[in-house]
Amino acid sequence: MTRPILWALGVLGTAAITGGSMTERVAKLARGGTAPTAEAAQAVPGSAASVTLSQDLSGHFKAHPQVEGQVLRMLVDTGATLCVFTSEDAARIGIRVAERDFTARVGTANGTVPAAPVRVREMRIGGIAVRDVEALVLPRGRLETSLLGMSFLRRLRGFEVAAGRMILRG
Image (cartoon, rainbow, N blue to C red; front, top):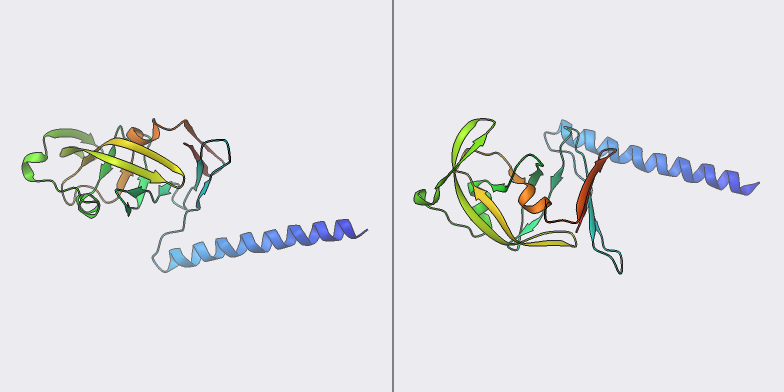
């Protein structure tokens, strides 16, 4: 007799907790912020790490990798061949580019832009680390948010998207 009551209390408690977190997301968006993304690393003994990202209210997946020791905010972009850094993020992680370094031309949704090819020693999301990642730096004002592209993602064991979550497997 007490099991159904305990089960019902558990379901109600879970619903209350979930409802509160959604309320917090909406309130933060109303204040002009962005909805938080759940980014949790789960290392299972004897297996590789995995990281789960939650879709934000605009339908995007954002990650906060540690790049060269600095935490950046990046938009996951499976359509980007390489990881791409804003000039500000590049400077934050210690990559200095001069005008002469913009030797590549890349096609973007906003047309063709110059880019500086770079290589990042290590990018880490949770328990997943990828070394020697090819990337580009775009000139100031050409990119709003750095992109976590396929030069990082294709080096994982895999990734999948389902039910508003992206699971990265290291």
